[in-house]
Length: 81
Image (cartoon, rainbow, N blue to C red; front, top):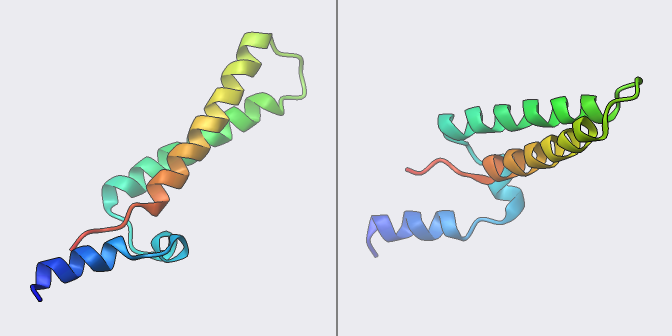
């Protein structure tokens, strides 16, 4: 077998748990950090102790959701050889 086909199959056959702990490229580490910050800002808007307008609370919910999705997708991206 060719070496390149082995690396493709090796990456394609990873389980979700193995993908999460596998090394991540520097680009996706930056994307993951942006997602975490978006989630934190959204969570802060949702949990604010003062009454905020409905539009701000809605934006906070969308930021928290988008941050969680971006973070999870970026974490499962693996570094290619």
